Each structure stands twice: as C-alpha cells, then as structure tokens.
Length: 170
Image (cartoon, rainbow, N blue to C red; front, side, top):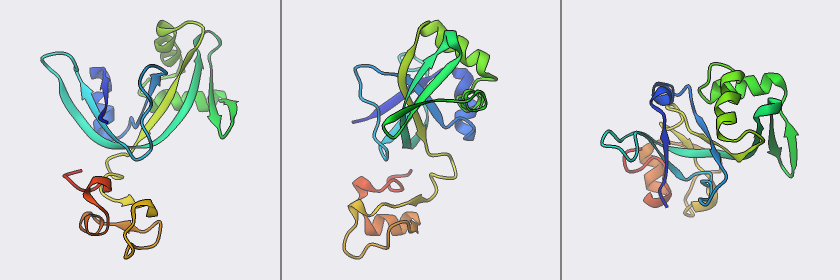
C-alpha cells in the first residue's frame, strides 16, 4: 500500500531540510502507516502542480488528541493517555512546522473546536535515510546481529529488496 501525504506549500522547505519530520493526521477511513512503511510526501496533490518532495520511512505512530479550546494535547504512552506539559506542547507545535502553540491550536481549532482525534506520524530525517538500523525480523541466516548499521550494499546483500529501506534509490 502506498501511503502518500499532501502538505501545504509553507511546510515544504522545513520538510526538505529535515526540520519538520512529522505530521498530525485525523483518524479516518484510512489506517495510519506502520513503522517501517514507505511514506511519499507531496505538495499540490490533485492539482497540475503536484510534485513529490520526499520519499521516506515511517519511524513512529502515536495516537494523539488535540483540544484547541483548552489548549491541551494528550498522547498515548503504552496503554495510558498522558496530557503534555506546556513545554511539550510548544515543542510539538514547532516540530510540526508552526511558529508557536497559538498558531498550532488555531490551525486545529479551525478543523474541530471540541477535539481533534488522530495520529502523530513521524519519519526518518535526511541523515537517517543514508543508513538504517536493520531489524532481524527479515534476516537470512547469515545476517549480522540485531542493531548493526548496514550500508546500502550490505543491506541489499543480506535482506530481500522488498524489505530493504536503502534499496531502489532511497
């Protein structure tokens, strides 16, 4: 399954530079991506000016609730929900491409006053796409120990192309 996300033009430079490595998406008909799944990031989807700005790999998916009227955010940690501190909310807003938490809450408030339910989706940054820590779940018998960082060549030698995040021009 191809997981594609469209972004507003104002976020493009931060995505390309690696400053923005996450997106928050509403819980909907589509399932969120799985960790390790390829993500295709676009600007201008469904227009004549559509272009892919990045192909990357999902590194983390966290359920998130945003309450714009209360200026509160909660995420899951294991089985429990935890309300983020003011500092964590500020850091989240900046990491998501907003200048501050007020802009962040204004954006999500325009979508849903009482509560936004979704997923915080994180991806590998530019330096993370050069080398990956490879999991043993797809290893052949001669595979290195878990946690070993492999180069592009080593990765494609040890793992099938279909599971290798560094193969096919990544």
